[in-house]
Length: 302
Length: 334
Image (tube, rainbow over all chains, first blue to last red; front, top):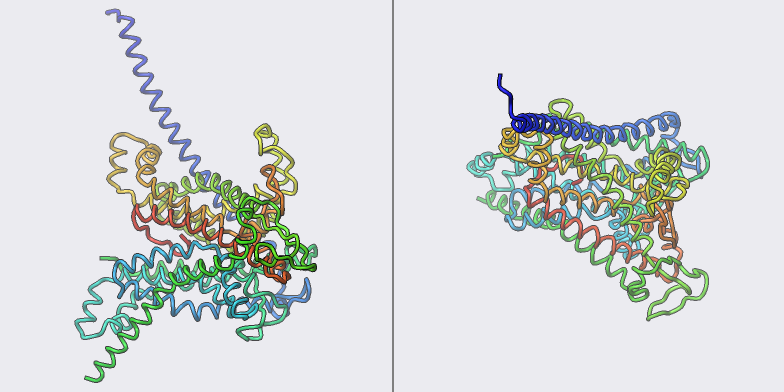
């Protein structure tokens, strides 16, 4: 049995311990890193769940069915005027935004030259980043004051159009671009013009994606407040279906003004309005999700 | 023959209409810029640089005589200094970013690499849902849950532990203020940054990651030393995207910010107003000012906000697009 020289032993053992220590430290840091990451994900999900549960509990306990059939009186009453007003504004907006957005998206995907399409895509993304309050103020300056429409449904609808347009253009464009090129070639080979090819053949596989974009934009428009403050005004009566010179009430207004009032009736209205909005918007998002799964967001790209 | 000609005319007509429609986003963006800047010209002449350096936002005597100053009519004693709102916007969005960036990047890493199958789609759905919740609902939750918690627990806690750091000490008050605004904003931009970073991380070529694993790196080290460096530019872009959104957000900050006027924030718990919130809040003043000067001053505020957000958005888009065209996620406004 030979005696190891102390140096060798020391070198040997430290080397081994070091590598073991290093491996353990790396395993530990990996463990802690992913632990932290999971904690962050849990934090986000936890906050979301807390938000949903708070609003749902407050909403369910304060909601009464007769709120759907009575209008607001001062700080009490119902929400009928606000519900109808919100639907009225979103209807005006979608009637304008859907054709413009879909046509624009079709042009970008089917007809436009690459440089123009790229430029429009870029600036559409930038438009979607314009703060909604600035959009509202722009419409206020141009239409409410400039053209003298006053607070009105059409002004508010146009403000919503500016908010919705980027969603519709982008979703139409990106789903159409996923439609296989062979479909277009087949249509052209049958003697169809490019318009006929789009209107009879190419849109079919993209319909799901376009519908998703429309639904998403409706969900966004339902929840908007800032662009309506300076354009829709507020009315405690049901909308009279006039486009200009007539103020309109809407649900998000109820949420943010009535929660600042010191009366429990007003709070009940605010909770109920937020609850209704949340339910409708969550339903739309789930529907979008189902559509995406069914259609798979268009055919695979080639 | 005539049918063929008719369909050709339809084709041309459709193309023309569609081309006009495709130009709409550009036209609208240019119109917004032009109208808002034109609307702010009288205020720019009236206030000059004092608009950015002044802290007094005073509408003047709305019922008194109208004075003429620098060729512009305004109520006597009117002063429009937006520094308070500029600081409020920058401070609240900075707090939001400090919180949201690490949380979003780590959540995105979990979504991209740690979960798959039904759990992945469930988590993605939740994140997208968070992006779809209206900002007034965030504001309502902020008033009901977040602000009381900040006022009673988080604020005093931070002041107790880190009170020796300037700006972090002081009384937490009601909880309506800078910290609550930052927290709500963080929660609102987390889904935006998370979705963008997740898409970027999923685009990292598989071979690079496998190379890392082949060298014996742990999955965490692959994330730290392989994936994050590859997506760095896009990551900065995603952060800028979230920043732009945080600066432009109106309702949530209006509801939990505490609506400060004419005072700069003293500490983390002071009430603040952002530019967006003050535009929303000053609606009544815009209506009552006979000289319309308040309208012009708010337009200048809107123009300033527009320039700030569009600039950050431009940088963000250029950076994100350079990394690779990320697929858009339905429901998330990226």
